[in-house]
Every structure is written in structure tokens, then in C-alpha cells.
Length: 325
Image (cartoon, rainbow, N blue to C red; front, side):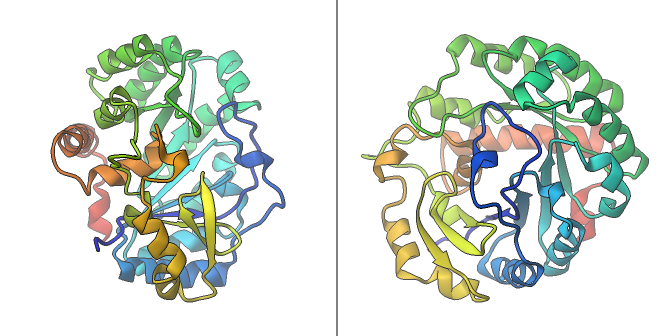
């Protein structure tokens, strides 16, 4: 059995945005992860093989203990990632300095009108202020542009902003939780053309997956259950993934035991074969899946990641996050 690569830690399902393409903010009841649980789970996830932890939500900066979570992750030897809508980042920048290896700032347009419409809140101005606050604290965020039919033509201005600040622009195709990709081929082609520019990252393996119709249950490629550990705010192991939770195993301080549970073994045996797996193309689970594959998916993914590393850490001369380990 291959070891997991990534820990997706949902530390809260609270959110101060109302994004058009996300429903987590609708979840009830609202729950925050406990510090004692997170500390234990981080150590055990690293022992299980994880190298990265993505603290997510909801909006992770709504959790008051996020800085301590990040410190615990670094102590455990995990590389850290946080994606934020930036509504709270400016006021928390100093306490997060030096703790996030891969910070991602969500920005979906080059104008407040469109960005705020997509995000369901007034956050565009906060993103701009957060970029400056981050750089002042030696935090170098990637600008995460989730592209859709509605906003693909607004990427030019975001790229100019990224270029001015010497930041990476990530193009992330919006995904449908149920059913096939709803983004037209023309929009994907625009993204591919744009990704040829300096400082732009697009994982082409995501588009190869969509070209093939996503995961196929008769011949599955998804490795969500084996490549990724997903922990919910209430301290459960979510199986096979967060978006399609058909089983939840209470961790109760023993993640290793939860990983050996009958429920997880069943999820591993059914990996990519559930009815809801047909056509699936959820980016955050396929990204680590590609690393467990061979052939074109792995090759496309690694080529794009190599461009990211060369641009950010050599061309832009940003501090290399591996130095902290």
C-alpha cells in the first residue's frame, strides 16, 4: 500500500465569503477543530507518510489557533499551505510570518465588481492590501485565479498585478462536484495559451483529465483515499474524500488506527469506483493522484511543477521553502 502524500485538514467550516462555486459555507452546524486534536493528528499524519498539510475550510483564517497549527505542522516536519480569501489576512499577517510555505490568495478578477460578485462579498480591496501586507512580512503568496466561463477574460489584469509584484499566478479550473466538467473547451484553450506566459502556473494534467472525461469507474485513476488524508473540523477521517463523504471514522487521538479501520480499507478497495466517482475531476484530489501514477498524467504534472519551482525560487528569487526543513 502506497503512503499518503497530502493531509487536507479542514480546520473550520465557517466562512465569511459566499463563493458562487463553493457550498461549504452552507454547512451546519459550524465547527472548529480543537488544538489538541490537530497537534496529535499532524504528528501521526507525518508518520503515515504525508509531506504536505493544507489547512483549509471554510476560511482558515477564521480559526484563532491557525498560527499554532502551523507551528505544530512545522515541528512535525510538514510543509504548509493555506488558501485564504484575504478578508482577515492584513490584520493577521505578522503572526503568520514565517509559518506558511505555500500561501495562496484567492483573486478571481481584475476588478472589484466581478471579483466581489463571484466571492459574494467585498474582498477585492482586501486582497490588494493583503498582498502588500504579506510582502512587508516576507510572505510571498501565489495568486490563485479560479477560472470559469464568467471570468476567464479578466485574467490579464490579474497577471499584470502578479508580474508587478513578482508573484506566481495560478490558473485553477473550476470543478464540478457532480458530473462532467462544465467549462467549455474554448475557455480551457484560453487558459492554456495564457499559461505560456512567464510566472503563470496551470497544471495541464487537470485538462488532460477533463479531455478524457474525468475518472471512469470501470477503469479508475483516482487515488483520493490512498494519496490524501482528509480530516474534518469535528475530528473525523472523511472517506473517500471531503466532497463525497460516505464514511467518517472518529479519530479520537489515534489517526493510525483510523487509517487501518475497516471503513478506510473499504474506501481503498472502492477507490474511484463509487457511483459518484464517474466523471470526477476535483483538482485537490487529483493533484496528489498524479504523483502516484506513471505516464502522461505524471509527466504533464511534473513539467508544470518544474516551471513553477524554476520561476518562483530561481527567477523571482523567493526564499526556497525546503530550507526550513
